[in-house]
Length: 226
Ligand code: NJP
Image (cartoon, rainbow, N blue to C red; front, side, top):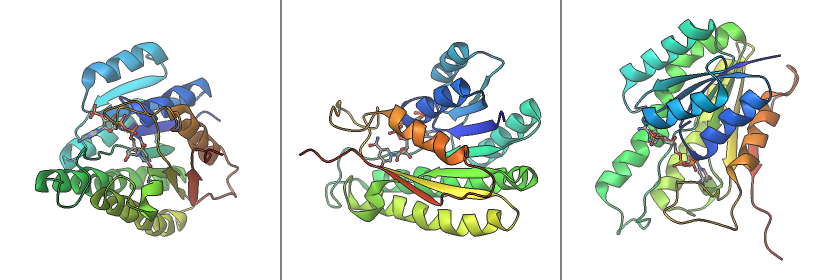
């Protein structure tokens, strides 16, 4: 069945790849990020019948409320929401990192996800839908810095609690835990990392399960080198 999927952080990397794979699989997408130009280019690629650009800064709760309202107004419902927008910091150590970078990571990776859930939940309850959060393997070790890792620990716990809330209404919550992925998240290429496509396939796997199946957590790691 074709699903209506709202994706935050859809302009590049994992979010963009999830959007491409979703449309290829017959779903329709609403794409949110700050870069209007990139979103419009993606809509052009995917086709205006399949995709809608919703330029949004996820740190602004009012903008997220409008984002969800516009997606529902356009498509009539929401079946899946992928809360994927996230940021890291180039200086990763606690002493080296700036206070501003700590604030930004907590604002985008944690607080903004609670806004996405708050505004999307009424629609996901109505559709018995599915909320997917992009967590990280880093929640189990400070691979991208202690503050970043802690933001993804928040996401891991938040997903469990949200899963109880939405689960009570017949919906589902899944937390993806990618290992390192070669995306613009990093300043330099990461040839040994996962590709965004690898995470997108995991996303589709999670949302394409029959209604009686729940995948609460889904780790996707690069295979260790031998
Ligand atoms: O990174 P990137 P990824 N408002 O930089 C958007 C997690 N993760 O795909 O606003 C709205 O290509 C930004 O768009 P724009 C990671 O923590 C990654 O790798 O136009 N959107 C872009 O679309 C994150 O949660 C790795 O700049 C905002 C997107 O977020 C997710 O995967 C490993 C925004 C970031 O795309 C996607 O990251 C892992 C705002 N204020 C988890 N700020 C990895 N790459 O290795 C940013 O375990 N965005």
